[in-house]
Length: 204
Image (cartoon, rainbow, N blue to C red; front, side, top):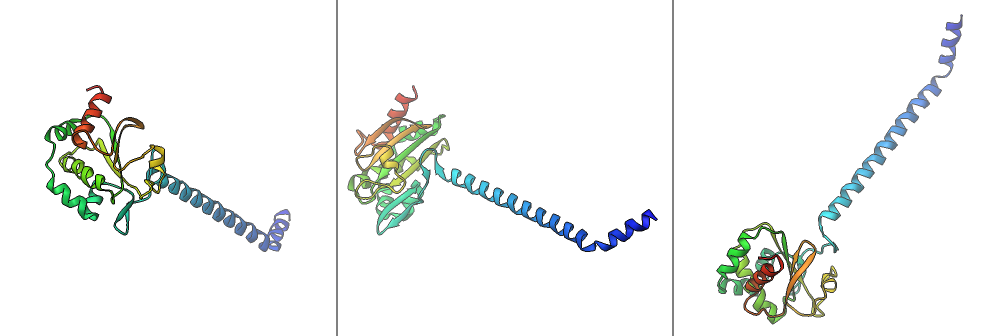
């Protein structure tokens, strides 16, 4: 008799049993959606970190405003997109001593080149660096080009952070530490001066 009463009780409450199941499924769906949102947010944060400079936040990719470069790019981008730099780079001889030194370098080094593509000094001295760097195959060296406007500002605030007051300015970093810079005109050519900076700053 007790078994029959229990069975009748179950039969009287089919809706309640179903409701509990639906609520459980809804809760599971909500938890799954929350997990997916959290995972998506984590991916976005990691992506933002990987596309940013170590200290500068998000990076503006290189582009052209008329004929003037803005944002951050590499040597290949400049040579592909700005004819005067490509033409002059092809006309300049490689500094073989500097290229050999940079090829053999075992330290992690970043060279930041702040330049206004509109600026005559940049059009002379940056291709002189490119002519040598084209012959260097060393993935320990990162060469980054930061485009400046005519107020010597860039879109990511790096010129202000590194106190850039002239175009071009070559800033040499080991890690996050500046070990030297070339302002406007090198003493010989940019690659040779950078070699001297590295020899002095790295102790050899």
